[in-house]
Length: 517
Image (cartoon, rainbow, N blue to C red; front, side):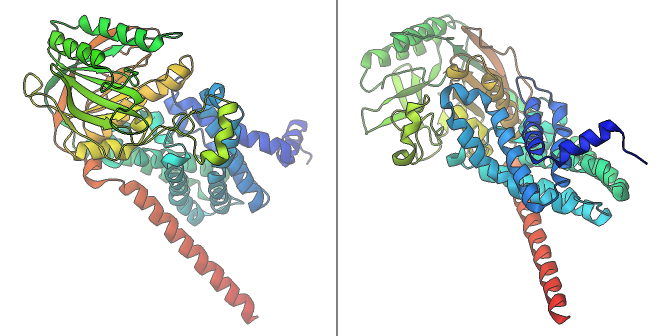
């Protein structure tokens, strides 16, 4: 029996190392479409299958590791492609380096799904392959490697059952289930001897989601708080810092008489330290008096009381700054500091990397609003991409914060996927913690999510310059994720450790058997 021409052609393509390399990059990039702006959330549940089928067919372990690496680089490039204007060629270097994290994952896929795996191998794959993916995400989530932007579970930010799962196990549990379904589908295609196990795997993941949806607790609503977000829009050119402040002041004055409890400005909304500029301090205090509420502004400036430039959330009341201040702790690599500047300082010559490193804060802060209409509300501030870190919002909720506020600025990436990607994190953090989140930006997208992760009111897009008022639902109680922490991560690491022990024992037994011959 002869092969059809198309089959022969496909076979030759899959045998070509260059074609396989290109396919690995494209297959790795495919899951990026599940994130905003495309937001094809359903794609995440099948998007890894082509990549896994390619890797499992690798003739050697070295080839599988290479295709895991290339796919990881493709994924990172696709999810972070909007960084290209800022980092230029350096983004290729970063993607290549971080893509290496997926090389061991490629080895796992080939080891457990390669050849014609039986039911036992597929059962192991359904646990170990998702655990390996979570292990990769955990390592790359380290702030010095770029942070947890683009975690696969975050693609499900608008799916109510997934948000309920996040309240139990965080974004990590959602990601584990997503990869578990992809693994089962890959096995369904490639493992005819174990298709029943693969079907059971899909049903088991669906059962976990259904079980959480049916039996997991939900937050108990406890009134509302009235929060205003001030988004000045794009203000460029000479004197932009002062003109932006003037526009924010103008928009804030429009809130007078609307009985708001808190007014939130975006990241870098104040470009000069208030200790050096009593005139700005007085203008902010006058705004607070006219609106009848405290202002949470963000100062991006060289401080007057200590060396260096800080990004700080500052609460300002009718008499001026209240003393509540949070200095940003986790900085954006290259955007706000250069890692190992003595070695990588050249990045400033090829992109928009930080000319001077920002300084880090030392601790998270929970701020208390005046005991008036705000009822002494406790607010937990985050700055910019800190909203991507699940542990930071969980810490604030554990410390008593009733409202999470993220102050952000994605002006540099105004016409890219970045603003929508960033805004989507508010829903996820709110669902994880049972605490509503206000995501306030300079130029959009600004949004508010309730304690279940549902969007409240209008989203202020990148084409808006406006102030918007939101009646934000509050909740009492503590979510399972805040109580139990990252158990899905620890469980994944335990699975990987047990798998490693089993593989070591198998190797030792095999070695002993060979020696006895």
